Image 1: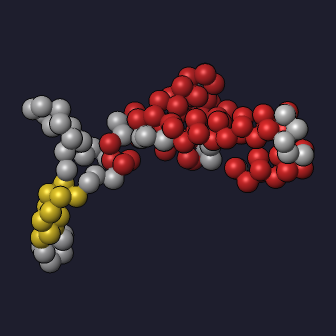
Image 2: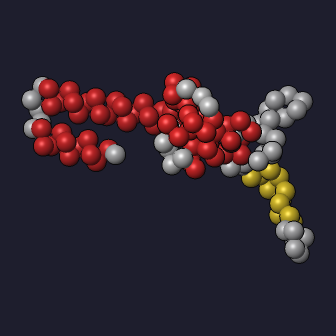
Length: 121
């Protein structure tokens, strides 16, 4: 996207303060946050483009980028963390583990555990 997201002077976070219509030149001033994906590096943006085009098929991403499965997973995890989405995965894992533990303790029947796990997907 090539939009700078860090100040070249102090590395602080940049915000958009002015928008202008390319047709009528109407200008809107304010403090506007950059879209979350605008903060991706060109490398991350390319990785995400390939990942989406492959519909999340890691084997296809491996083939397209000529990188290993662990590298694809590591880059995906790193990108999720940079975007603040890594905690969502950790929370989902924690909730799945909690359901399995309840099943092991006999607190819920297998059918209920299956239904709860499917609901998390």
